[in-house]
Image (tube, rainbow, N blue to C red; front, side):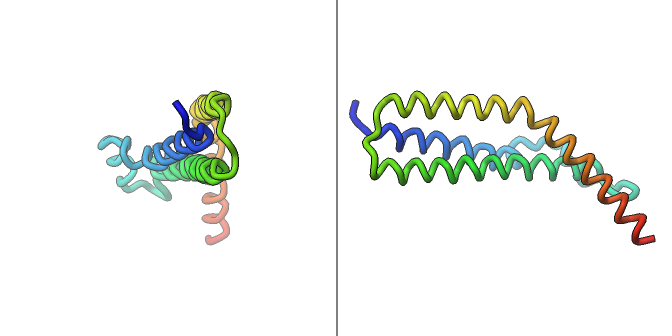
Length: 126
């Protein structure tokens, strides 16, 4: 089979990026939506955590899309060998595994920082 494997690798990065961008919308169940829309005193910690997760997934998804489009553009100027596909696929798999393993910890730390910021702003406003 002939073809430019760099282009195919770029498409794989694009698909992964688009999936991450859509994940927050598609896989948001009714229980979680109910928690996020409920009213709480001061602020809704469930909504805050969901927004932090969405921002994190959006940043990674957008980065994967940009990198994928960059690979597709590069494929117009470089002959794509099969090894590029295997290396690119391996890198993408490692990136996604690392992201899904660390996502919870990163989001938790960002949420804690944001809660501290909100509480500090509320004290300043009093």
